[in-house]
Image 1 (cartoon, rainbow, N blue to C red):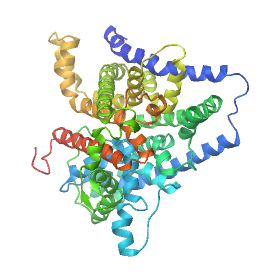
Image 2 (cartoon, rainbow, N blue to C red):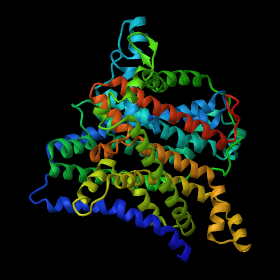
Image 3 (cartoon, one colour):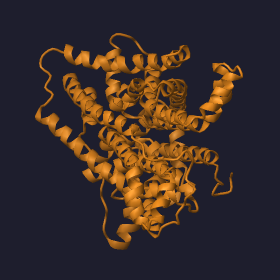
Length: 533
């Protein structure tokens, strides 16, 4: 590699070595050094692995069923309020898992909005999916269907229309043209997004913990129980090894599928179809089963269900200090530290990604691409376990270790976003600047960053949202001196202060929606549905 390529890739390599590979290796060393036999393939472990596979597969199938129609609508059609719909549909993925679980609790609960205001008064029946396998599957699908919709929708919008037009000229109907021409080109994006959704469902934590109940334990939940409740480090090490093996296989498959490509054009396709009739039924279903929990979660923070009136009582209680003992600190501190941690990790992700992806794309260094994407193979709670072991050798203050973990978790997403930007970067502009005598920093600040602005903002936003919503690693390492919104909401919920937990989550959900909505509009270049842009 040239000198600048080494310089560009060194920061990300050094960071990942210290923040990711060292804790990962320590887990293996610790498992070997425990002494005695570590029973990996016990009946209990095999049952947990089997159930984890089962719920992840069902969840992924449901996510595909929900996500693919939406991908077609946003990728191929134009309709009023399209960008409101797109922003709302993105919220579940970036929504903190605690907020999502509280939304399900409020909307689908026995006395939730769906049952109390619609099903029971109209039909005298109740839909009760919570605290069952159905609740887990619905929660995971709700959380991960945006991956299918965004990735496949983006692929649809950039399909080269030449092939579709050729099929139509040859007499193929719309359905046959889609089935025999477009679908084969979309299969890599469908497979990639589905496998990624499966990985997230496989390592699901808060969804299983809050919507499934104590009867249902996945690998992630059981590792947490071993570490925090039973203090069984051998059991945790055994399950961690199993999880690393399985998720590592899935991530390897993901890296292979990611390199597969359909026939896509550089620009967004101008070929748009009319909004289909089935789209209305799909949107209605989304409003009820997807947007319903989002709206109810927001409403629950400002609505008294006993009096059926708007109220700010829960927000006042949240910030009055009454519930501070249950949080372990204060709501203000939770918001402040969450913003600090999320911003710090997002900035790190962007800085490490923008320079490392340039070197990797230019030199086609696939080994670094695989290494930097590999954190997808390690769940947050497993990584946190490595930091618990690391504390035996080096003292690391909680703010530093939690920012490091958030950065490692979000890095693959930011890395892939910037890598896709560099793959479409106009090299001739960069070369022209070099001919004119521009140095590295001049090209970075005046050419590369302005051109890559959409990918930079996307990487920052998703990294920020992932950090804000992370709960499993934070729960394992939790220090009340540095509270976070997600853990504070969980502690309020588990201590029966549900309205206050919902109020805290409602504020976070509203902020998340508006951040993504207002930043998506300038990037898309489309006129705002409300005339704001």
